Image 1 (cartoon, rainbow, N blue to C red):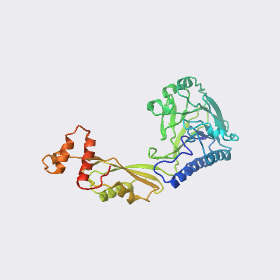
Image 2 (cartoon, helix red, strand yellow):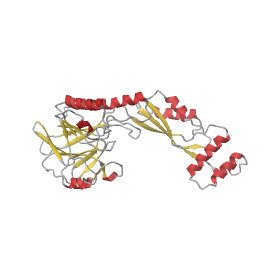
Image 3 (tube, rainbow, N blue to C red):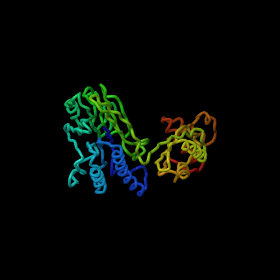
Image 4 (spheres, rainbow, N blue to C red):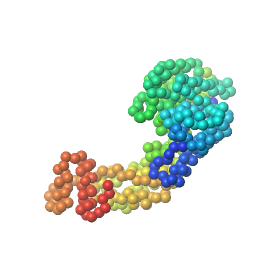
Length: 369
């Protein structure tokens, strides 16, 4: 038996990352199409069910187009059962707006709900609950699963080892140990993560299907589950890269670079060895230590690579290097200015930034803040 585990699709989301209005509209459509492509992939692979572990949508007010697109896609694949567990971004809006709930769409509530998926005499139990703040421990302790069954549990939240994010219910893995869970299908974290769940299970975040901003860089997709036959069924999980476009944050060291031309050459060198494709969204982050009198224009770098990728941006995270000893005996106005700043009770990073701006002003250059 084959299943798909996905989560955090955030359909109908407002697009960010400095996209133009036309690009934002295009990306919204691409997210919907990636969902449909995943379902078609599942049909081609003979997948029996698709587990959506929360945040199918991004907003409480789902557009008519997105609502109809998702509902029609689900109805079109009646041989696939869709298990939809709502996450912290989901609401009742999508379901309440439908005239009828598709027969192959199964839902969960704030109490444990369980279903059985069958294929050729093989049975798998799908169990899930939509977490509410403060009620997690009671729910986890009340979970009862039979050791003789193949058990998959669906939850949406932040595992306790990485707790601290806002608007996320806590998934305490220690409370879920020894619960006869073979596979814990999680949603909320937007990158693929997997680990052991005692005694012989696995927990897994599938990550999101498509990155939307540069906080969601790297390969995105879903997890394909294959369940062996027999009394002691084993679940094999495989991450399937599937995003139409990938976002990259590429660090480029600017140490010993003094001009914008040199900076462009350094960026060109690094990008030529990267996996970035013309259809991808790319941010170059400038790093390293640069001299106070170096001239690196962000605008010139962006102009040089504009049009090479679907989106290209540059962020300057270099830090300034100032050798105060070289100015100790400098009798010029520049030397006096540097010595004056050096005497101030300020962080070194702040001093360096002030010195750079001041020297640029002394030379009549445009100050890059």
